[in-house]
Image 1 (tube, rainbow, N blue to C red):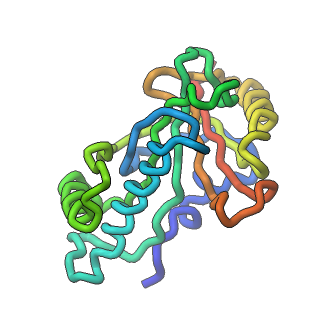
Image 2 (image 1 turned 120 degrees about the vertical axis):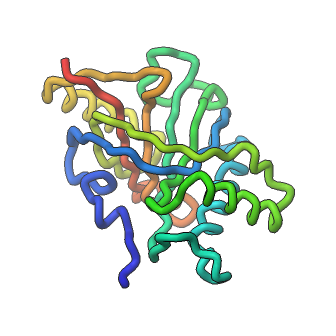
Length: 212
């Protein structure tokens, strides 16, 4: 059986060809919350290690004959991030001081993953990497709801121009921004900045909206 790759089976959510209004259904994630500049924060680097460690623990469970019920072959989905600051007007444009960032980093999980499997993965990863603070990780079921999104190509610091384009599109569609404590600026990282030139990075920029 072919591996499930959500970027291909759900292209409308991961590979928008143009700005679009989408309704994002409930999904399952592993998540880590934190604060600080993602370029320099040890907490952010640690969050990456935790999320990828847990995600690949589940994916590779079949190698030890411990795959959970309903397991199927799949590609680990891309890293995602929710971003905000203490400024209630934050709309995704980076603050002057990036240490002001607050974030939730996420990796989507296949539908067969539940809280019991999350707990199992934490236990297994703790045995291999006891130095990781796995208590920072959490299991999350989340329905994002109505959003607008667009594909940004280029460095992260050039995102404001794309955000302006998305905002104009949102207005044209009769919608308004709908940011709140539970609805954040959202980015999905389709490229690895360690291996991809900045001008070729692809990032889905997604923002919560509501009908006017």
